[in-house]
Length: 234
Image (cartoon, rainbow, N blue to C red; front, top):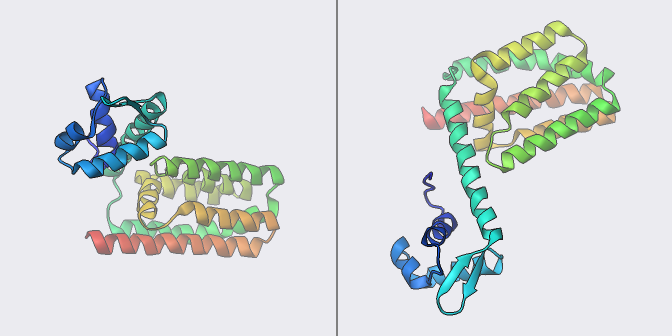
């Protein structure tokens, strides 16, 4: 079982599951080295939420709903571990490498966005909306949403109708998994989904100039986040 540091609910539920019988606040307090009053308050809360069930004076056991919640905590943590593994495997590590990629992307994707805004269809807008919904869900579950980020920018390249521009952006984003690095950094400081939603808003309005400007702002925010990240970690 993975270890989840500083997760009180996880540790509490884990102890109850392992005991496989009703557990009281006093024994949990000893096990978790936590004041009994604190344990008692959390037990009442978990019971109110339907995760625990009281068995007379013997203590509490986990419910089916509680087991499902515990499994979700475990799965979320596994996703986070997987994300860290992927980031550690990435080859693009220097600030200069990432910024150089972003400066080129800013030039190329401004043009892509402008061209795509002149050709996009309602169905393609719905495709983008679905990508952003999936991305938001992935991020809520502890993942980076990096695949949806790549999918979003690749789709705009396709819609633009300029194969050369589209191929160039796709190449520099996927080189050494750079898009993964950007998603990881942005999750720490801001959200890529909000930027993408703003771009989509102008696509729907049919305003190519505003779409292009929103794309430049989007890339500029990533640039600022990269600089912020390296100033704090290097």
